Image (cartoon, rainbow over all chains, first blue to last red; front, side, top):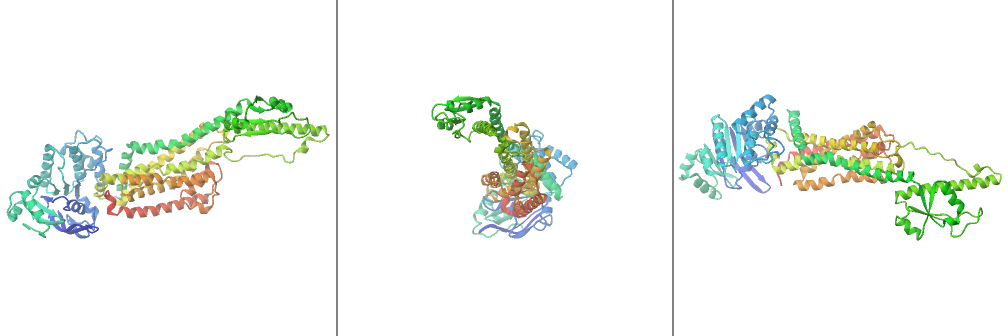
Length: 249
Length: 390
């Protein structure tokens, strides 16, 4: 479970995240959505501890990520927006590198990699160097890299960005499987249909603040709107005038 | 876990960069350029001297008919007279004659006043240096023998004309042009130390940040200092590879070129070569730490490239200055990293004795500088900005 409590972050005079609190529960997919510049990426970076908040805390399975960032990171698997692969390493070497960074033993790591190769359908390119990989192949390696240590909490930034229909569907199926295993999944996406189809709870971020959060049914009830895109537009356009709107909490 | 994470980062960087053509080119091929350049200099300079020393001595001469005794003596000494027509100075300066021997304009009366002889030389040309020295030697012999004959004719011992009987013994590794060429080796080694691992340092920090993979790396359960040490290790290995390649290439070059003609008594032994490399070891860490630090504080790969390109010039220039204006190795100078090592390497390649205290001070001072650099590096790596392109 990821519990965010009153997170705030500024860069100089620019306040990027202001007093953000929400919970991403185990066995659920939580969608974090917001317009460009809403602070989603900064939120991601704060949760996965590469940025330090000015105020507030994040608990990863009850571990305060400020006090014990290494323990928190061990329980997190992160798929960043930039897949950023090492072009001279093979897909297998990527998975091995990140598995070793998590301290997984050699034989166990080999078994996990084989498992991921099958799960993510990487058989064709697992021993090829990453240079020249298609977007789909890059995403699969990055996803494998995030899952190799079998984290209980998984954060995905735009997981289907730039993927074809078949690969996007495969990713969505995988996320449902991970949810069914009881893992906590936090994802951002610009594709409202995807969030609507996957998310058990939605957090709408605008101008660094939460303007709406709750289960999709609660959001529909609270706003009187049926379409998630309409709900999103209404919430973000009112963000400047309306401090925060909570639903279903 | 501390060592394991560092080793994991180190291993990854090694595999990654051993597959990178630029890293290999800079650490394995570029270091060959120095020995190749110096070898060519040895070949051209040494080859020129050897040809001149073995070849018949041709003496371009003006007014040969006015000193028949001297000309006959020179011919008996193996010289061939080549009458010179036109302006001797312009013929020599234009390279059409190695030198010119100008004899008096009028026939000289035998045995009275000294014979007026003029040599026009051009020391900028190797063939001129060698041929001139052979002619001067012949002229001196002619003078000694003629004077000896006159003294004997007057009933005096010929030894009367000698005040000193000079014997010279060279106990150094080299003399003449070889000394100059040997003193160029330390600056080449220093330059290589500051370039050998540069691409690894650049790519593993600035490059990784620009590609976004640095951020992904730091999302894992590793301390930033562990990452820095892992990357430092890989940079050091590539620097060591460059140093090793260059040291071996210098050794091979010095054992393959015609050293005797240049004045090289014996090329450095393997032991001396190992000592030179050992003296450089603290600099390997210093160079790698400096490169990583520069890559970390600069905003982009291009900016880092600019500074890292200039970095080897600082210690390299000090070495070049030392080659031209030798400085005595004093303990105070040992405390200046790179300068102390340049002095030491100079002594080692010239086969001079080196002081253990000097070596100790040099190593300690350099390692202290490394410790300070790493402390700064650890602090810099804790900054948030280190992860994101600016």
